[in-house]
Amino acid sequence: MRRIEDVLDVWFDSGSMPYAQVHYPFENQKWFDGSPGGVAGEAGPDGESGVDAHFPGDFIVEYIGQTRGWFYTLHVLATALFDKPAFRTCVSHGIVLGNDGQKMSKSLRNYPSVFEVFDRDGSDAMRWFLMSSPVLRGGNLIVTEEGIREGTRQMLLPLWSTWYFFSLYANATGHTATWRTDSTDVLDRYLLAKTRDLIADVTGDLERLDSTLAAARLRDFADVLTNWYVRRSRDRFWAGVAADGTGADAFDTLYTVLETVTRVAAPLLPLVSERIWQGLTGGRSVHLTDWPDAAVFPADPGLVTAMDQVRLISSTVLSLRKKAGLRVRLPLANLTVVTTNTAALAGFEGILRDELNLKAVTLVEQQPDSAESYGITSKLTVNARAAGPRLGKQVQQVIKAARTGDWSETDGVVTAGGIALAAGEYELELQAASTAADAESVLNSSALALLAGGGFVLLETTTTPELEAEGLARDLIRAVQDTRKSAGFEVSDRIRLDLVFFDEADAATFALATAVDVPGETLATRFASHTSSSVDADVLAAGTPAEWLPGLTGTPVEHYVRFEANHYANSAPVIVAVARDKGTIHV
Image 1 (tube, rainbow, N blue to C red):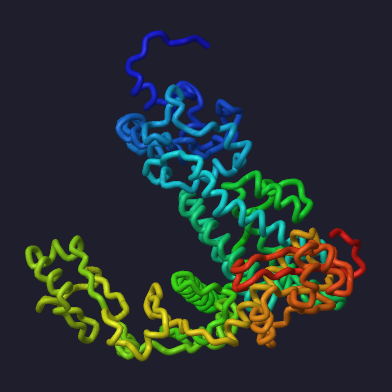
Image 2: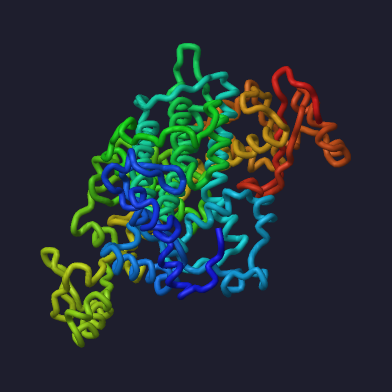
């Protein structure tokens, strides 16, 4: 090999790359253009032979500046010499910028240390950050540590925490999960159908070389998996698997989905997927397995649509609760959902009640006058960019009419200022009436939110002493779980539980919550509540809880936590004391 000293033009050289690199047409003709007889003909530069043409190339990638450089000269020369394009598929990515907004540069050092990112977040976090970013669609990308960690939070941690959750409970119950897709449980069916859609969608995205959209679908699925399926199914995993196999559906379904999702995510998260898949299957490598087949998973578009709507309603109402300062553990009386196709949602009222901690859910089929009957008005927004080319100067007249309320809708046709609007030139959305008097009977005690895609929800925000009592009981269940965790108990440990109230009012409120099974939800085989007034005042003032708790409870205490006033809904301190049945004493 020798260097050619005289170069005609560097862009001419780079544009000649596909054929110059194999010394075509002087060598490797059959390998290059797929001439007949290539199977038995000469081998290519890498020893390969065959009739498949190696030009044009299947794939090429470079940054957007090469549209006038390398991409251009490749095409010019390929057209002149072969009358065909130089490549079949092209990815033109944007510019990678440093944290100061300037082009990333080694001399400027305007980017996070790669080694620090690898040590702290892992190389998969960096890979996910790049592959899921808009840079692969031609947009610019600013590399920051916060952006890399955000990807970790959105995808890597949910996937890993789900694997940890599964292994924890599967090991606790001693169940060896199997790969199957025939569960009849509605949540299992929903997750399996969503997995089918995920495989089909990501397969199409990656075949189109669109890793950004593929990553977005995986991120959305991770939310479904962790924040919906696992959380909604926690009690099923808590119960374990009986000797007759009852309860195995949840474990087998989660195992099946996790094993499949790691294969789907493997191109984008190669190391994390590898670790999880090996832990699940004991196999050699996820990268040596076949790509998942969507057809082996059941299709249920009706269930997916309905459950997605339930998730949307839940998310919307939880936002309402947060805005109104009503914690989720505080039960509320009623939620009214006004939407279309309520028949499909009727079977999921129980999920909505449990998910949102409601006593009742009322489903109302949306009618043309539903908004008006609940004191809600419609708002017209004109899309000037869409309407402008057709209406010209009249678009300002239409915009003014929309703002002043001079518009109407008749038989699906919207007219503003006497001018009919076409589809796509406007948006209609519902909003709360501008004055409380317009909807006093409904909205005074309710919170309103609009649903994406149409419809709205009304959440009753008025509480009663009974609801407040149940809320306090739910708070204390959370306190017990936190105490179990800080004590280092196993999830399956049965305990003795004692609650000590420092305020008689808190104790009286808790006593009203007869509908809440505190022992059952905390695995307590013995439960009692006490007030601090039962302890001698001098002892209470001078001693620590470790000294006087055993005398009050009548049994040894392994661990206790004091929750100060207003930690939850408690107006005064509450002590949670726990001990494992037949456990050792660690006070």
